[in-house]
Length: 376
Image 1 (cartoon, helix red, strand yellow):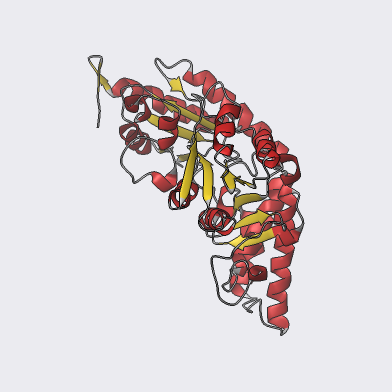
Image 2: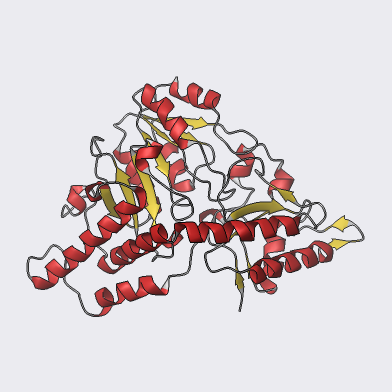
């Protein structure tokens, strides 16, 4: 069986989530907008799932808008909360689903980060001086795993009465995510990062935010996101959120233990660089490089060894060039092109980590010929 260590890209569907979904794939086919019994069954299932997702991040269910995923939720936040022409301020290390809509805005400010990928207070002050209508800084980075001090940054924005959005897709299910504690007005979630189905996510928002819908039609999701609801996926999201909340500590402890085993093993391999090692990070993520060995070459060799890891964001994996996250951190281009991300999941074991370390050590030697480093 292959060793899967790419859980930041996607997680396997939990069997308990599938069990919750099956009745709405096989038996209950009603449109949740219909008033007859089958419609009411679907509507009740959606509202139960809304409560489960709300509990994961400590909000009222009415604040949860279901979307087709994290990308749509991010777009709804950035486009829906800013009037035109508006100014957006987003960090340089955001996911493409934040950076791309921000770059299309009439006015766009990119908030710089330090060498560990953290937004500094000075950078935040500089961005706020431009009077943006919305600030967006992700809670945890999908590549490095670095956790931002969103509570502090959001408090700075609040002093200027600027709404704050955080993409919590990678953080939810790995660390505690509490909107009240963070002080944010908009927050993005995605089911397939917490062992739920793909194609379903949510934007959680403060009802005081004047949010402009981007999907118009039948007025579903209280008018904020029209379109017939994907009932089975929503039910799966709800169950995944319930399990993530109940098992948070158990998953965290397991991931942290395996991460420490991984870091100890990496220390035994010559020349390994671990990015953002000085910053607070997710318990499951390590971003590393073997200088001089192209990341894509290493990934292919690891795949031949039945070990699945990533070179960065799965959404950007087909794009040429080094990681924009590492570039924003000031990492030299050739080193950035060697980057490989390991992201641990709830069902990984010590044997999985050892398999990775064995394969990495072997490839570190095989990809060097007479001390000359081989590039793809």
